[in-house]
Image 1 (cartoon, one colour):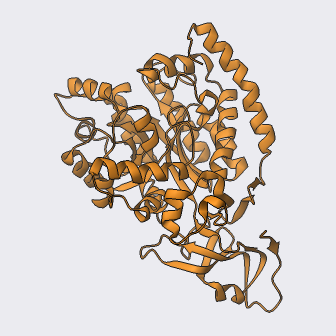
Image 2: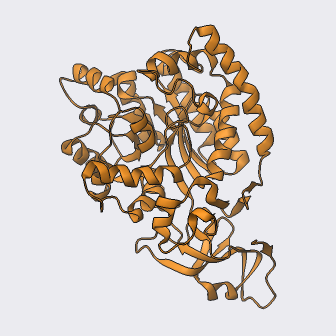
Image 3: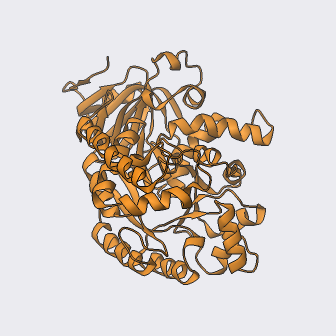
Length: 456
């Protein structure tokens, strides 16, 4: 069992934390690997990375000897709706689920309390699955921000903007006003990036999308949006914009730029992909949610190979049912092999790159996170290599993609702070958070029963 010990007094340089004796996957430009590696942290940043001898050069307050486990960048979930954990497993197979079931359920139940309870639960799930940064789109995002701050994660949080009345705004303009207040409150937070989140092109007007685009440029904040996701979206936009695709429409109205992080991008052709690349947008590939909803398979492999900014996402826990990016790995690799009729397509290295540097690039944060390099923020996870499902480990990338699951994540460090050690979260009370979510299920059940729906 690995432990935290003090270093002896002969070390030459001071540091706060040394993570050593691990199989280090840096995910840097050259995909450098240190089979017996060390990562040195001071403050919130990595100050050195190298082989096992590096540890001897530092005197650190703490040393984590991980005994051969994988040391790698924290995973990045580029798209989710974290607070929807409280709705997980409801109406999983209902057709037209978003409009028939989810929107009406949210109209009854979304509140500050519900958002806080769901976000707390989702944060715990993500930390235990190796996610250190996530991008979220929902309501009352200031409540989500409080939960992120407390647990110690990093997040891009988008306040929803949508044309019909919702829990925290009567219309899109009120949603924009709410978002602006949120942005002003959190713009200087070290781990939270506030954002606009217009739900989708078809659920907002052209004027709203253009207003959000202008404000995002003015405030220099991200815009999180569902794009090219559904048949309904294609039909509405084609009618609105003389047959244009959603991507071409967004470009035509001046709302497609480097601030945009587009979730899904399923129904896109080569012209759309080139337009997205020229606009320098980020893309969130949500494999499990997309295939569960039978929406199709995004040409994510082509977008990755063409150099677009593409990372992995889980979508909300009412869509893909988990917030585990690790559990996306297997499906991303295998489904792209299937649709491309090529066993060699989407190899493990590409999947891990998408989950780390790809996600960082999608969020335009590649200068800060996504790889283990000197000067970058110390967002690091340790993955167990001694669990039965991980033995033997001949190739760490293959082991992560085809063998690992979220329970194999042992330790999590965000900004140099250990927030999980040996699967125990150190910053929040996991049992209390879980119990509060369990208690809330009765509220959800009562609302579903009152609505007359038979799907629980």
